Image (tube, rainbow over all chains, first blue to last red; front, top):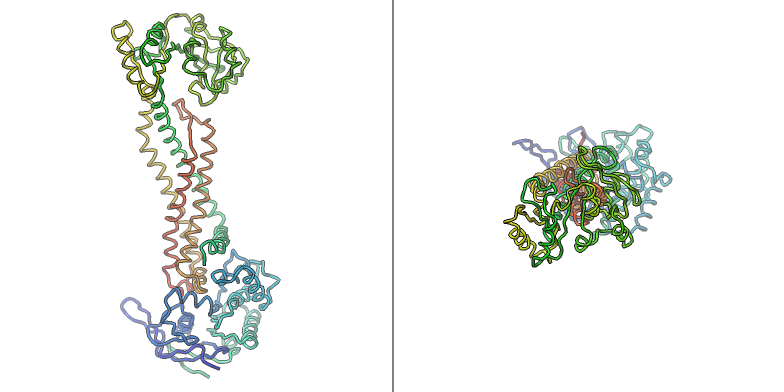
Length: 226
Length: 389
């Protein structure tokens, strides 16, 4: 498998008052297309920061971060917005659905700023909701769905643009074990059958066990890559 | 993406956000409706004031009254009218005697205006009076043409025989038969027009009138004609003071003009306060949705697009509330039934006043949405996604 994500000497720090606080230090990592990687580590180890950098939500202090052969630091902000819209799917711990919109409309959100026409958007949303098993609940609002169903809607939203990469930040952190298992099974299935690349931040060893590879972070450095 | 495509795609999202907290949206909306109603009402009042002045200045009507503070008493010789009619530039001169009293209700205010029909009608036929009504008025000594407002105030109708009783009962009551009506909006819509000879027969004091109404050939020479009239009677026992209608209305106009700036400030203050209320309401909504805004930005909504969404939300509520408030004002004041208290004039308004007021809701929406829109995109995406209240 070729490397979809190539990270070399990545460094990220934040300023707290006058002092610089390093979060990631000299981190190098490759993620191949079609992988399912779990990022694990204690709180403050830099997992979410790394995920945000891969997503282009944040900029590294220094180092190189190439995705699909392109250096993210070279992108201007509007270009990065477009790239995220077309190439990256997001799954969040608290689903981050818009409560006043139906499941269908939530899934459609990334497509609303694409060039797809209404018919194409409808087909893609219906297909994404079918994949996550919620075609019959497409008109329901998030408040009318269980936590597991809401997270499946969020997965459909992440998939609707056929992304290169799906980034999940604690996707089962707000779910009971049954729903968590359902969501993880769905992600694993999509990874196996559709070849979707997943990078998942998790604290939960059971969730990490569903990934093909676990990347352990400690104090902003790579601890172990089994 | 073309702008209209963007608007069509994002409008449902913007509109739904307003339904997220219906009570807050409803209160904000109500505040806007009230503020724009108030603002449009004040603008309509200013419009009415300016039109009273400009209409009067365009008019060639003059009022010749005794040069005496108590000029409302009938003391001017009615023969002055004939003398005035001989002056150059005068089209018609008609002696007028006013009779003040109460109508149907004791204590109500009703005015009868005694005229010499032949002289007075040279100045024009009262608005809304038909030919048959006019003939009926001319053919009977105790006939009257009554203004619509007076008819409505007293629940009178054409064909009724009615009575105006003088205040204090010092003068005999004046009874007349209503033979026709004068349309609302005519300058005579609050009086009962009777024949002068009949009024003199009832009330006594023949040969003395309240004023002589004069129509100059055109408005441009009205002031010169007024001077000529006053010069003619300067050495008589009863000198005159001839004024244009504008001057006739001067005390009222002056009192309103003093208030003009104050009214305008009150109107704009109402809008400014409402702007702050709308801005606060939108800002609260944006703050509550910080994580959602972070999500939108994560999935590719750029800063400009998020700013557009927040501004659209503010604009939608401001324009809807502002337009409704302005339209309410139109509904109330365009009828011409609402009087300016104590002035004897009805509020007027115009489409231009309504449109101008409603259009102010556009900059209001933009201003109200500016700060919340800025705060929506100021935060980094990762901070917005982590945000919790």
